[in-house]
Image (cartoon, rainbow, N blue to C red; front, side, top):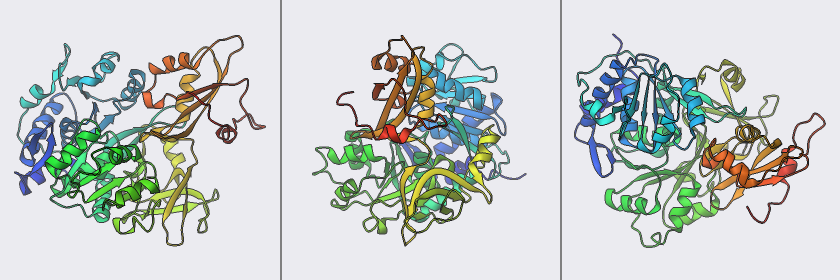
Length: 510
């Protein structure tokens, strides 16, 4: 029988190589690689008893927790597909993703209990497992796991089998489930280990959300593969970050602009001992040059990259040696991937000419779950994935991201697709038309600005719409600004002129 060639084989292999080394630290409790192997095997046996088999889905909803990693590896031991869900989303948003992915088991954290219990029970969902305080009919995670069989499970899994479904907000208003295979994740780990020099004594802080591929496949999985230690925190907290650096000698951190800006603005910044930090890595949006220089003045180096969920995620990377000379660049293509910048006719642009970024390589998604149309639309001949982002190359082949062909904007590290927000605003009975754009914000990088045309005779305020959206959208998706207009600017074909809206000055208040 073919052995498990996917991520499900990693705990056993690591336990054989480095059984007593610490794999994870959560809430100051260390978990060795031997313990990870035993716990994931026990959990896999319980998932199998629940009916999980090759190709079945297991969903996880909650903040960062060691149980996230255990549930993922246990799912992969069985050849199942792991579906990490964004805990910031509302019940209708989560409900759509569960209906679309069809998991056999849902594991959730206590902060998500209200959302889970607001959902109708899907007929295909056989077990609901709570990390704490299970409701009647639900399993308690620790008790359920402890009663599992520790006998090794031998299920054949190929590298090209799907490993994850990661939901990305869709430009048409519905999220798409990007599939990543075991091979996609492994090749991305190789690319990171080449670009960052990940070491076996790495102590990696995992504080960005693991339901995003960046925290998962840019830090946790490469660290596990090398036998390092991942210090997992439920969420980002500046003071806790300083404490953990001091307590555990953190060597590697990933974050977005808002996290690194808050860290540098802390009163502890000047006097803190940060000598253990070897690598600071960012993605999601370009780090401002001024902030990079703030870190460089402390002798700390940023490694920036560019990528997408669909590229697992690394497409380009700026290594530490180039971080000062090429401030603001997203780097060059990662070792095992190819990147082009093209015109609409798919010919390559000249140096300094903007065009769409295309990515090809073993890290690129095979497509979207149960969405052949979206899959076909995302690729050009030769397996080139269309990012929808606008970039340009300098004369040394370094990529600079200059705009987004799609209207997506990034708020606090989270992707927001205006079409999704617009679709929900339009559900309000007083709204005739709406358009949403992203605008700069000092704290979050970008926030939403909604332009609304009310229905004739209908009275509606920004507060009315905020309250309406609060029950339907995650907080980071709700626009900060609401502005009411008699009509929206449009082209001759009736398409809204968003560039014209972007040129309007921001209102004084919110």
